[in-house]
Each structure stands twice: as C-alpha cells, then as structure tokens.
Image (cartoon, rainbow, N blue to C red):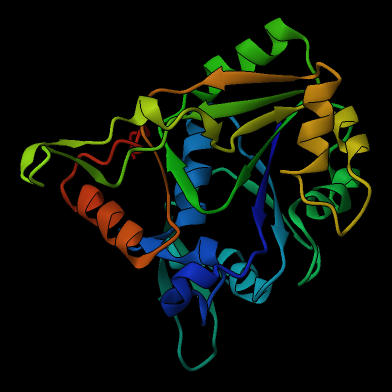
Length: 258
C-alpha cells in the first residue's frame, strides 16, 4: 500500500521557518515533520510513499537524495573521493518525489500523481500534522464501510479559556474550552479508493472543497473518529509545543520503537 503526502504548500503562517524551506521540512526534534509522518505510516506497515512537491520542492529532494549517507557511518578517502558505508540506519522506505507545481491546489496535486498509485487502496495526508492515529484500525474501518473515501475526524483542543462573569463583571469561574464543543473536523489521514480521484477536476481543485463535498453528497465519505493526539504545525507556537513534547521523551505521536 502507498501513502501520498501533500508537501507543496507555502506555509505562510509559519513564514519564519518556511521562507527557506517547505513547511513539511520544519524540524521537530531535529527531524522534519515529513519524516515524523512517514515514521507513523511505517509503524503500520506502509513504507511506499508518494510525496507531492511544490514550493521549494528541491529541499525535500535533497533531503531524501542524501538521506542514506546522512544516516550512515562513512569512511572517506579525501585524496581519491572514494567512500564506504560502514553502518547504515536508514529506514526501509521507497520514496517517489513528484513536482506537482508551485500553484497547484491540494486536489490537483493528488490528481497529478494518480498514475503512480495503481488501482489499489491508498492513504493520503498533509505534510504538516502529527498524530498517533491508528492507521491499521482506520484501514479496517474503511474496508468494512466500503466507501470510496474515509477521513480521520478529530476534535482540536480549545485554545481559549472561557470566563464566566456576574452582572458586576466579576469573574466567577474560569474554564478551558472543552474540545467537544468545537465539533469534529477534517484531520487528514485519509484512506481512498482510486475512483475517489475522479471527483477532482484539475489543478485548481481544492481537495477539501468540491471533492469531499461531492463524495459526502454521494454517500461515499466515511469518518473514522480519532480521539487521541492530533496537532498541526501551523505557527511557531505549534512548533514550540511539539518540540517540548519531543524533548520530554513522551511525544504522543512517537509510536515507533526506533
């Protein structure tokens, strides 16, 4: 099975980082977000990836082109330039990197890589969100429902506390906004059948608009409810929060052993 990762966006809300690199290459714990997402899929037995490139896609190409050497011990003869791999710690991944255009929308990017996906069920997600979602359970849910598409439904944490006041404007209580008041949202981590791509018209199509709406209209979209950890990395605050979790040694999305 393959997993498609959308990695071509600008990441304007975290411009401090994305001015020099694609948003999925923003690092948490010294590794790009993209790597963390791939480690999650790999934990569930998915090691074949198609990465949709766009903005500064060459940064992602260079990362994976040099990944084998960067994760290995090397013996280098500086006089001849010859080198020898002494010990490699590279993951057993196959990564297909496709330039899907700098201005292409999310649906258009998926449509552009359709020829690399074959006729089997595949996964799709964004390159900027970390989660401990059970991909294996979602795949089982998708197959049991028999729909063209399954989306991971998540409840984002409330970011603002609620002040309760009396008539004199005295605060009587303070409470964090519970996530269940926000409702369920699109958390990415889709499971799709190839025919779902037929709902995409072209480069200007946002996956989150007409395709998902029309799949729902036709009764072809199911929601896998994920109540565990889910966090996009949209801002520097998000990055810092994720860094703190990683540094604590108990990052919820780190479900893999090594």
